[in-house]
Length: 438
Ligand code: UGA
Image (cartoon, rainbow, N blue to C red):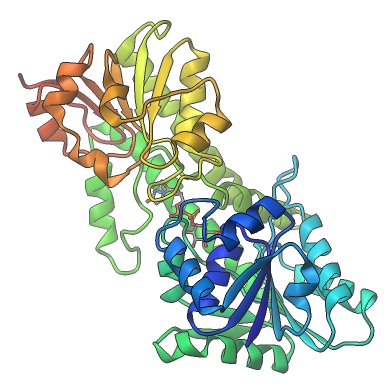
């Protein structure tokens, strides 16, 4: 099938690459000309595992191309995906300006009947608005509007696209649903679950899924505070809860809380939507409040351990909002770094992928080019993102380089006993602190 994709960000690009991989002819449009040139050369604008390979495969096979001209992506297409940003307004609501513009562009450029798919995360009711815009600007063609929310995780976006937990498609149009089934048939043949609903239900399922995952994380973080007060261990409590299949272990890791461009903004937008619809979803405000509090909890632990913060040197391992990505948007690591810098600490950050994005976002942060040079003369190491390589930290080498053997492990990544055996004071989140054992 011929597919147009509007937007080549963290949703649009993996979607375009995956659809080309399963055999469709994809043209992706973006307004940023420099990005288009970069993509047509096979260079990626951000890091995502397997993406460069998939885009290269599509370019070589002639199944994917990138354009700065919307008509090239939309004319002759069977399906057009809207994958534009829905950034938060100061009120917490999602701004839908780009979605409206994309719908208008579809209406202007369409030269036949078209299925218009919204993949951007939007509040319930957006599909109806998109349908209005399409019919207002184009009375000649028939449009079927579909909501097809994405459940991709950054860092594993390509894996998730090729192995989706579900393909959720909402529409009031039988033609829309039928075209979407044909589009995804190669994945359905490999066992992917295909679910159809009305459009508002699909839109709601996206917000509800993210909100529920964030709720699990905040539950674990609240539990961490109780564990600290009682001497319990939040990791073991989560393990004991998680073996119950009704609860599940996933997303019960206490630490520095959730960040990124999805959870914080989606929870705020869902709360705002509920309030506008007349339901006070206070639980969502509490989820966000507990999440903010985790930064305070980590800051307090560091301050308590270091006493006066002015002039101290902290090595921060991990700057991205989670491992596997160079994305630092709403990164809890950067929020903690900002608090420390504000209190007079020199923070030297190191991240396997996100040094450059972190420096751009926070110029006052120093970054080290390798892990061990970040540790030189540090009063404390803070593990702020759970990159797997940090679990293999050479503790002896770290101890020799540092001014003081102190690790604040805000992601509960290390094995506590091993850290203490190596002569470090060890401060985790929601677990007993350990004194150095040598
Ligand atoms: C999230 C959802 O997991 C995806 O299903 C969804 O498609 C996506 O948002 C989106 O709306 O686009 P993502 O933001 O990439 O994906 O990241 P997650 O892996 O969900 O992690 C989010 C945050 O929660 C990270 O900061 C992570 O460190 C934190 N987290 C996760 C915890 O603090 N504890 C946990 O147990 C799990």
